[in-house]
Length: 437
Image (cartoon, rainbow, N blue to C red; front, side, top):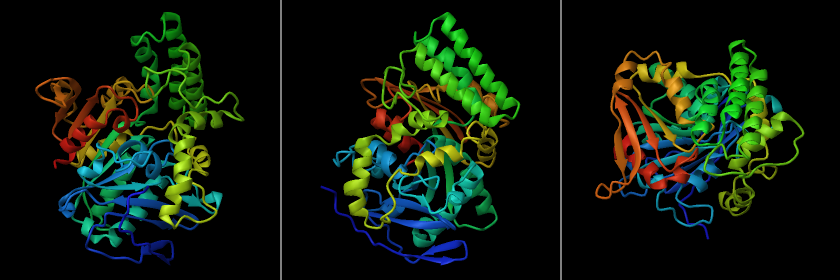
């Protein structure tokens, strides 16, 4: 049975391509959700949870952005990772709502309960995604002006890191231009697709270190990874996406279908036997994991009924394959410069990595971090790591953190790609360390 909530359903009032939510309140509700039409034919869904605190107005606001592209924050991030209830609608004892007010946005438009009414409204690059996020977040703050002075952080996972980096830069510039009133504090990039080439080039050696490849297999994987990198260097981005897929196919064949999100597992779903196209294969591998049937049944059943505002012709996740397809050319482009911008402008920038993740592995993250133009990079690289424990007495190491000035790197043990799902207690402690509550 779903937990009761204090929800006010509201309408959207349109004004050209800008849309204002017809609701204002200085109080933070237990729970609320709604739509914002960010452009013509483009409708984005959001879901807010007030912090589980009698003083929630003093708690930070955390936005969670899912990966894919096409994964649903309101679905996977909410029920599988860090929301107040799990997929069985049982209370989660590691929910981030203990520490913060948490906002989920189904992004890009077409993900989750977000939808388009014209294919031309899909985004094709992260700049467009960031622009849409700025519109929906601006409208959200107009609806909840109590959050304009609240410390605001963006947390994310996977491709969400690419979107977060560019949205963070877009938001900061909008704040400087006085287009939005927001107390933006920083971003936390979880197992993020910041520099795809650096990730792909690290895969072979990473798998070799786990005994998942032998010498000849390592050479084969590295060869096709180098081809992928060359395609990116030549500006052949669509071709580089195809070669990225071919690299993953070879890895699958050589490792007995290792789970690229947790290398201690094999033959994890989804592994459909037939694909109509290479993009369909990529979608099934990298977005399908966010949309298992059990979650889809939950979202399209009791959650849809609870929300009460989902249009009759909208099915949760139905447009996510198109979201992924429309981003395919932009997919392999790096956004290191956006991360550099955030660091240089004194925002808190955190990278957190699950040790068992291959797709956005820690060696790949170390590679792209080394490319930052941040003047203090050498000091960061020379800094010592601090071990992290859930119990200081037992000293069962659950992670490490390295920090210099406003940049930190968390190494999370016993976790793959989905850190909050795999090591919820350590993820919650990490959240506490970052937002300082």
